[in-house]
Picture (cartoon, rainbow, N blue to C red):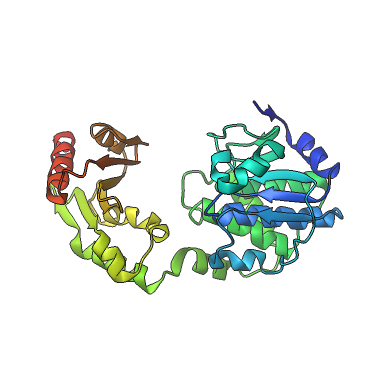
Length: 319
Ligand SMILES: [Mn+2]
């Protein structure tokens, strides 16, 4: 079990050590890389060396966060982590680094406490908010390069300040970051607006094949393997497509059924207001949260059978 420490104890660990390796979760997002590379720059201002490790590599999409970090040519002495809820998300790095991790800086309430010490703030919308506090506590002044990375971290984990995790503290921190000169509008364009041609066509196909039930309160879309392969879209691009059926005016429950590689059908449900999709998914052996949940179906069921089972269950709740 980890020691849960406060920010000044965490900052002491950073002050008293050097040659850091910062662990990040597989398939890193803007918060993981934004926070990790901002922390690299903060440690550099203390005269220390730091590098970022990731099992699944450094996606091109986030290259603006790391392009000036090419030289990681030193042997690490201190292993730390950011935004890492669970050491199983380290992939192949787990065996070598997980037990050596002396400090994990995280904001997930579900953090498993694998590190020797954990600085956990589950009220923070992003790990980037905690890294901002760390810089303040260390007396390190933020600059445009640090601000750019922390902004990316916070903007991505809050869905551009739209999600319910956004707090007044989020906006206070961002109001400080915006004092520095960096192109936040372009960060948001790249993080939220730009999509591959395949993904644009996939979204068009989803809008096209969405079926509406119960006077337009329920929308159901289907993504087949054939559709994905014909458009050249891979799984990593599917995340936000699950939100599309709920975008139509009047819809309170949106269902996206995806054919998985193994042939099984997986349903992702999103709802608005009081409609509880985790209850619907639980009736099919799945689960999740009130407004976002999922469930899977055995391959013996066809897409038409799955659709009608789901629609019948939703109809029972809608009355
Ligand atoms: Mn995060």
